[in-house]
Image (cartoon, rainbow, N blue to C red; front, side):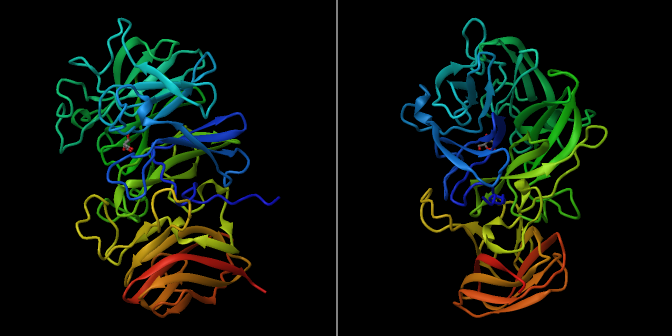
Length: 481
Ligand code: FUB
């Protein structure tokens, strides 16, 4: 049987799972994230679901169903609060512990199950030995975005915290809580009782001076892995679009800044900046995983013109001889182990770059979206049509895909709709000369042109030039005869 290719986003186009934490249990990789709604009004409106894939076929994801409902938390019987980013860890007892907060409540809940996909049932809240819930008392660390590690020696560490940025001065969320950065709390083997008091391990923006974390101070999204005896703490910096990492030989002290692993606008690579990213940026959250000897970073992108329909993507990463991780670029083929085949139908929704003639921007800061392209779908949330596409490509808008193996490709056929008239210029570099120009007439659905690029790994950029706007649904690469 031919293996399915892996693309980004790695789940079907109708699925919106941000904050993805990947883990290998047995011979499958499982992803635990929060669950946005298509066209959601706020973050995380849906219940937690889980998806998994065989470790040797990362394009073949299986839906594991709903694993935990927001109404299962006794503080939330009416489901009026949504569950934010979770993390999972297998305890010494072999059971699986799922950590989460209800929105910005500031206390950490735990659910437990007997398998990686549950069913999970409510277990309790992180508390001190006397039973007091952490986060309810003055001075407590504000509980948010868990990252959990059961160390080789069985000790359990919870990484948690929130570092409000410059617009929201320290302490304004719930007054009297601690927001100094990312904290490490050692837990008892019961996975829920505090053993050692919280210690701040990565500073937030007000405490960054002289620490080495300048410009990349902690904001949210703690995610911990131990790699070759070193603790790698991944987090989202106050810039929010990027996942950075810090390293230490110890779980609870001496973390130093490592670098940026991935940005959902490729900021830090080439000439991309916050003002001029190569995709529509917004918050970011994810984690690292080793699958069959290759490490990956999971992260998320924004769709549909806001931050409430985010989707999981993943890229391979590498470590240099000093254990440092160079920043990876966003691609359309992250988990595929190489470029996508130069034949077959591809959804336009796997574009890793998207921008208008005037560039892209931060989804929350763009006041007028009328001139911008965006990822969207028809139908309502979770109708499972998988017809996600790029809407509203106006004159000069570009969608970029990295990478294909085009050695044997002879033709490309576009699937478009809309009232755009002009041409689609296809090039292998963002500002490169077109290798083919395909005339576009309003209303036409399928348009093709010759595409002969004798290259093994090639990016494809589609620029619409003309009047009106086109919706870009997909394209087919056809083998040379
Ligand atoms: O998904 C809800 C919140 O957005 C997460 O808890 C944060 O990390 C950010 O991704």
